[in-house]
Image (cartoon, rainbow, N blue to C red; front, side, top):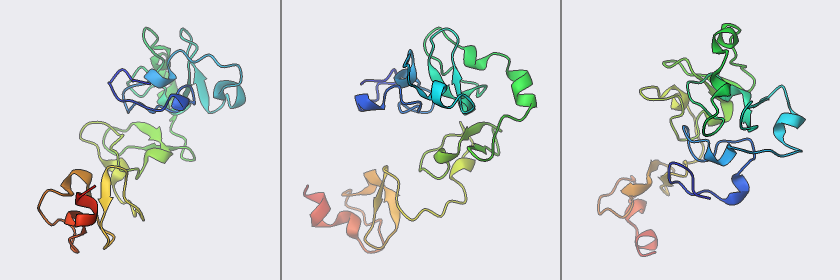
Length: 169
């Protein structure tokens, strides 16, 4: 499916309770009205949007972005009382150090900056034992940006980013 931000994702990722289009695009979760959905199964972890009926993770509530879909911003209503209770559950969420946003814990150390502009705290202190999907893993184990491969510059200490094996594909 094509997201509002023009990204394409597999159709089976729609209505699964996870925002797969990107950090500020909830197109794949908009207008999801499933009988056996996450809101029904786990009401303590999910929020049902009032107008669209979409089911979104609770940590998306009061994050400054409307995640319910076009014309429905009910996930951003009554935020002052919710934030006063410190809605960031340490078991399922991560509190960004600069923006103070609360993001899904699985987004920490995933290779993407999810805390917002000028806040990279969700990617700090990460001991990744693998490279993200936006990186190339050198044979030496280093991670470099994917677009640095086959650019006629050796970025891996072992030179594997310029090897004939990957540059002739």
